[in-house]
Every structure is written in C-alpha cells, then in structure tokens.
Length: 66
Image: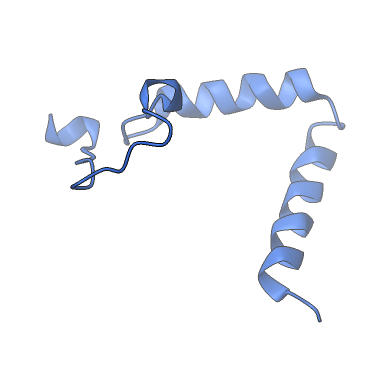
C-alpha cells in the first residue's frame, strides 16, 4: 500500500536536505532563523506534562495578537 502523504513528506525532506548540502548544522541554523522571524508563537514541548490529559486545548496566539 502506497501512502501519498508520506511520500510527499519524504520528497520535501529530501529537497530541503539537498538545498542545504545535507548539512544538519546549516539546516538547524536556517530553522532557528525562521523560528525567530515567525509570526506564530513557538511552543516548548519540554514544558508539556507527558501522560497528562489536557481538558481544553492550549490557545495559540500570533505575535501580532499579543
């Protein structure tokens, strides 16, 4: 069985890796640059409580909404 969505994710991953010469450090720096420029709030997953069920979803705000 072929998963078209997964295939697209892999193609995108391969294209991004190729763009940065398969250099993980270069890709990480670019992601950090994009993160700083993003309009959306970045969520730190380490702050989440593993195994705890959330009763209501977290509210996410863009920087413009703050």
